Image 1 (tube, each protein chain N blue to C red):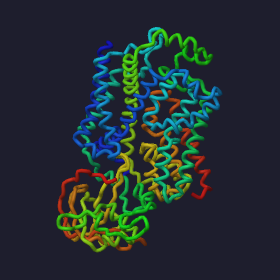
Image 2: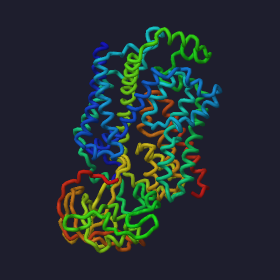
Image 3: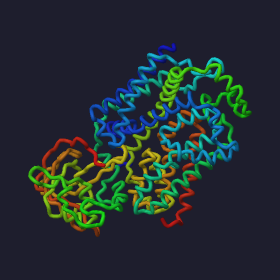
Image 4: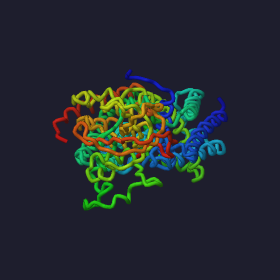
Length: 272
Length: 316
């Protein structure tokens, strides 16, 4: 294989990776894959890889390793055939970029188990042990909680799964939600456990520490008398009353649904 | 429900997310390796590391405190350092310890375990990580380089001979004769970085494929019943760390949620994961012989597991 073909293959491989990383960042598709902390690195890496691809093409240096000729040692090449390496470098990532649905299926939720208490929430112990929680000051004094609660145009509290899991553990915080009308957006999953009346389902949000591969499904139980059930993992907007019945010896968040509507996926499908 | 259900779209989703998270750090490591190649004088390592090989291993285990690297980016760096004359035992020690014994991991572990004996867990993680890495370094000290490194990664014979006899005069002349300008050196650093990136990323892609398969297809709830037995729980969580392939800077936040598991099992998860997982096994293969990687994986799994089980008397 000539040096020029090999250099071309290197440049194409680098350009492919650079283009894919830049594409994910520019189109904001990266939101569905990574924690925000890591997203800027994807963009920077994409730009650097594109620059490296251009540099490889424009400034050939493949056989100018310092001392190579005089010392007689060769470049430290791996034993993969160049073509196999080129295939591995380009095809899987391109195929996966095209096929990847940007959200997990119901199988993943079942495989990982639904987290429905604060104990299973990554980082919760750290945050829970560290005042101030929403609803209290450093000194533990209650504050006007209306300041931090997000509300819809008609004044309904827009709750996240995390809010309700924290509220279940904290009596002060629970007062802000208990018995009040809340709105929550999430994905539908049937309730296979903790379903005493048989009319519950779970509203899921994926909680991410670094990337989608470590996503944990957080589930809030929703009670609804409607017999119709949507497709698994479809996005719903629920409005209803937040309640915290004691189940298994601890308050458990349950939304008594008043309305259930299909919804568009939020711009950021994860919660962090 | 079967314990293994493969879904191609889920696989692609997890695969891409692992790549997006890891590639910037691999790239950082390879850029650093290119700069090391061109700008780090071989003599520098002799100056900062003790001449005694045992003492050098002990110090290498702490280098992560001043030069922290994540597990994804460290292989190209140590590959270049080995070519620059760093001894293989010291390089292996640094490779295993730096993703754990570093300030970022110390802070993240402490934060994640707030309310769960954070100070003890953080100290044990860094302490055990250091001891295991140093222990591996001393074992590697007894092995021949050709049984550890791939042929292509072995230090140049002439260079090794020169370093072992401290004949720096020849090196000085060598550098003086060719002394390229800054632009040329940057261009050569780029070429070295490109070579390293493409070499390592092939293995990273293969490792990410395996990791994504296990990550999405294996029913992780099957390991929950194992939490009741300390020994089983410890080895089960190391197995989980092996397939989750989490970054060492954030894995503590996941470990802290495994409340059903005993603290020593979480400790094993936190020490084993940054040293070995399915993705790392492939990345290590860019530098080490397959037999060495398999041996390292088995040894780490057993030693870390046994040590952590023996530590179960600690009331964390």
